[in-house]
Amino acid sequence: MWSNTGAARVQREINTAMHLRSTGGETTERGFKLWLVDQSWSNLCVEIHGPPDSPYEGGVFVVKILVPDTYPVVPPQVEFRTRIWHPNISPESGAISLDILWKGWSPDMSIRTILMTVRNIIANPDMGTPFDDDVARQYIHKHELFVRTAKHWTNRYANGPNIIPEFDEKIQALKDLGMYECLARSILSKKDWDVGKVSHNFLTIKSQHEN
Image (cartoon, rainbow, N blue to C red; front, side, top):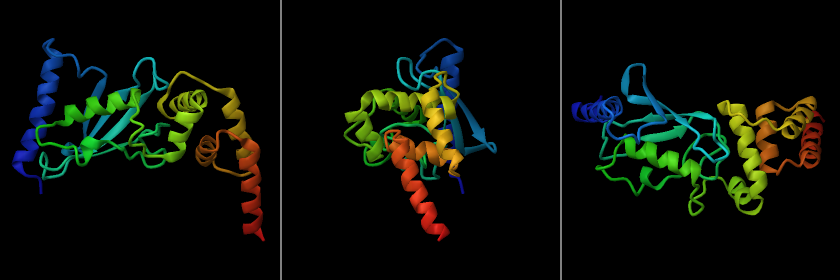
């Protein structure tokens, strides 16, 4: 069951943020759209716009926040519901490697703190705590390819503006072999878009299963 204190805390935080926007006070809440799922203060969704001058610019990402009844002693659970190619975020599950959601959390922090930190890390990845090794490797060693891949994912999953026909063609080549589109995109991204290598491995595995 929800504790009254926890529910009141979340309501107060959100109402304060809305008041700041509507009265022309602090403007740091701009770029977010928050709503309740099933009218529950423990189940929130937030739209975060991709930061300017980043590969995610123009995209809209949905983040889910599950607030425990022990909040604010225990931090919320936060994950991306919109898939994103980012070193600190799982491209499969949307889980985030973010210190303030674990050992760095303090009861003095808030939902707003989390949102501002998430938006900041989108634009400025923390390479000291990567979540996905393949994304981190690409970010460090093949940064131009990382940027193109991130733009492609933003276009496909977050309605971003950047279409990259080369990547679409490689995904289609794997789809023609019988691979699902999402899987093709994920594997190609992790293998630096080497469609020849990916298709060879896929056909080898497919042949083994058929035999």
